[in-house]
Length: 623
Picture 1 (tube, rainbow, N blue to C red):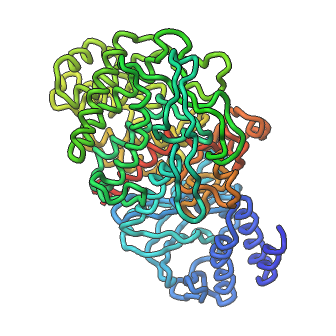
Picture 2 (cartoon, rainbow, N blue to C red):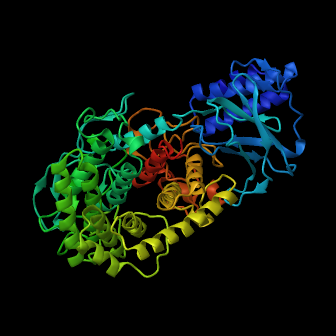
Picture 3 (cartoon, helix red, strand yellow):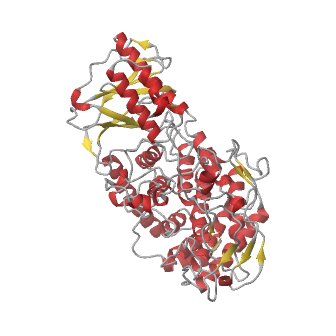
């Protein structure tokens, strides 16, 4: 534990207080929380000790005993290990809940919980749900639901002798989270100086670009921008596609939360809102990789991954890499650009008509190339070992591009093509980079000229998929929508995209329960999980600390770069650190270690649905 924990323990009296403080100190150090955070959390333990000696059960934020609300003695059958919830708190009008985690044994039925404010006054009380063993975590848990509490303030939850950390109810509870996670994309910029403040900065990087022999062309290429894809410094059209598309959809669905978002980026104060200006940095690079015939090269990376160094220290040539044989461009990359550029034409038109026209022309050209070359699949050519983003079938990307162009233009050629290629089976799942078909369905259904019969089928299939996720959220001890086999590489991205599906279901056919289930996944990502962590760097009381992210490791700063979502629990391993972990229930299969890239890498396509979800959480939808 070290001198810090011993010093703190030395200031406490009584075996229960010392045990509680020791447990808290060790758990905080286990999460890599800094000492200031430990001190703040220990205040609750110290205060509880004072109240215990005074014969009271509640403690004000000042640490003074508050005697208004006596509470019965703890039930020894139901020792509470922790109480977890969204560490950002809740908006007044949103659903609110927490998970109470027991140490085991046989918790009594109908255990009580109480909510007190910072003055020690009882504000709400109720009964926990029946305790159950949560299959995903192996924990014995019960839920505390307190949606009726709407008064802004700072509160703690009490249950069976244990206090939670403080949480807030505030209208702007999620505002900082939205800004931080979107600003994380500025931190991922390639080709320019970046300065997020507080020492998180780098000089212009990867300025030496060129066409690789696999591209079918020989030339140098000035850096056109883009975002570093993940923990590495590559840029990939396919993953940029769903990432940029998801962010642009957020702009269309929740403009009230995004139009005035201030990101403090170089473009701030210009004619284009900050949110769109940041997206344009990546979109410009996507457009740069389009050839004159409309096709798009697959990626721009070095031939192999660099070491854990800062981006400007990576002196390997950033190559435009192709398939290695004619036509050298790939269908997946081309169709992704077609879809994203079509959306961009809608979003940018009110602010920059010339840029919107450029995007629409690029989308048309890429769509035509994709129809002429529907099966040019990408595999890493010999000598290339960076991310492949290989796909076995690009029909879903072509369908997405077709639907987006139909929505943007209303032209019959796109609408008719969609109707002749849409599958008869409209089964619905959440989208991923390798499966964009749901985005095709949904954007078609949001098109004014959509065929009513097809639209009805899409809406019904989406409702069915949403209903399954709502049921799973009710059964899960931590309120998320994940099935046991969903704890895969990037499971937090799965949770984000499940939330996107639920929010689209609400858009297509109003469903408040779907909104609440989507917010349940936000709560899971930001603290309501069996690890008690926020899986976003520098967000919440206990954020994870060690992402697989080169700047976070190489910059010499203890805390990681802000606003980045961990990949999350992964029951299937994929790296030496993850593979060495003992087998546990799937939600437990996570470690805060930058070497565990199959559990703790960050990626732009995982951050995107989180930004989408936070935009919804900040919108009028939740007011």
